[in-house]
Image (cartoon, rainbow, N blue to C red; front, side, top):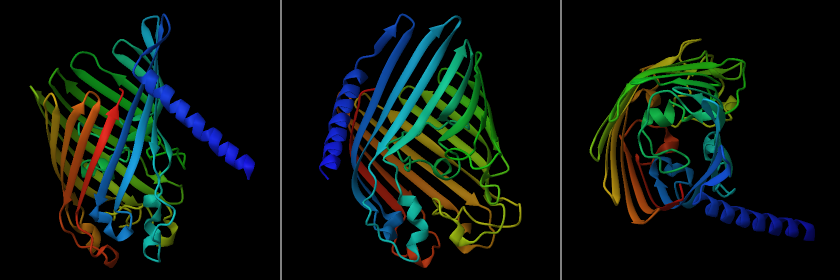
Length: 377
């Protein structure tokens, strides 16, 4: 018992010293040698969130804390550069005493949060307009300019939280000469390491200028998951961005394929489930389709920032009442600078009323968040 207590004390002391060292180094870039630099970054958030969409869960209203720590090593080589980037999320899990019964148990994985999560970790080489990277990084599908305000990424457009993955793991190639912007990736296709031998291909071709960008993207694979039961996760889309002064306008639209490849038993789904019934089966080896998109408007002043986002998604009507309703989502975000690097921020998310199962009765289609943020990027 005494040894365990000593171990806990050692871990706490180590984490405190590690955190203080990271904060100090985040403010001062480190020069390792004449050709190598180390740049550390950190973001700390404390917040209150109330998500009435999951009112039935018992975890819809909570205070929480989180952090994002990043480290980037750049080394100049002959005619090029080597880059190593690591971004780690520190998250606060829910208490273990979560309300679970016969109906809620199937959604329990949705509320299992890793205390430490690898967001990005890759090694890349670039030369001129060409770069290649291997590891886990931001997806090359489309372009999303919406402000991220949480590690969980929940306050984002519907197609970005439910269809397009935020990060992919694999091989990334980029080529950007002049106004052209080309990206190609061979990736696992799912959120983490793969559970089958199939790999996804992503391609994006775009044009860009100082204050504008436009592109078309596609992602194709025969399905993510085990070889016995796969889920489709394919889409094709278009993205647009225009900027003038302090105002930025962006938009994305996709045609989407999702759903199970084969019939399934409810008891066989032991991973995170879609609250929008996207993990459905329609016909053998036939994906369910949908079309959706959003428009996003941002205004950034010297001491404050506001974003308004509106989007809709139209799933294919397959005769499943809970699934077939179109989804409308509107998001408002506000950030106010209280001091250098110190911000007050808030968010409101609103959705349309839809037909729902008995478990979700009493839930309301809105969420809001209020928090403080300090960053040393």
